[in-house]
Amino acid sequence: MSRVREAHEFELIERISPEALASHPAWTHFEVEVDRARVLAWGVPAPALDDQVRQFEHCGLVPLCPVIEIGGLARIPDVMLAARFTAPGGPVFDGYLLDPHAFGLFHETEEYSFNRSLPGFSAREARRLAATLGCEVGDLFPLVWQLDPRATKDGELTAAGSVAIFW
Image 1 (spheres, rainbow, N blue to C red):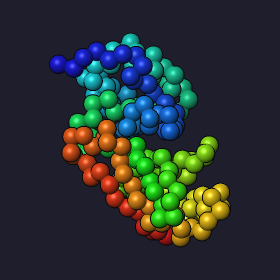
Image 2 (cartoon, rainbow, N blue to C red):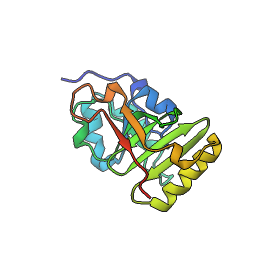
Image 3 (cartoon, rainbow, N blue to C red):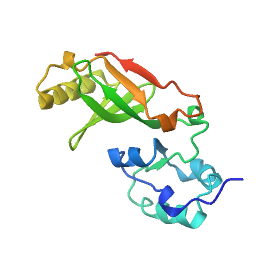
């Protein structure tokens, strides 16, 4: 039987951020019809969930929610996992992995998003990041990533890998 969660353990957010990833290592899109039962099974009280949902009812956004029960992450679609990325030249970035297609890096106050399905967009993001850092795009790749240990404690996910230039 799962325990009742404290209100601060569950929240719906508009966009992923370094602060959100620091508070929970895994986030996913929340759709009431699909995810309500799962979130309630985690022990989130229905009134707390309903209060969070009301904030997004009329804005058209699909919010993100933390994955409170880490076991079974591989079975939850579209999970953003906290990760640390290291470039060959040494810059280290906190970010997220949305396997198998996307990842994002945070540097200063900016997010740099990459998606294997959008190579042109990803190339522009890489150039934007390289310009900010004063280096060449080739100096950033391959990026080596390591998932937050909180997300890999059940041994279900690959904990590390790398991303080569894909455009």
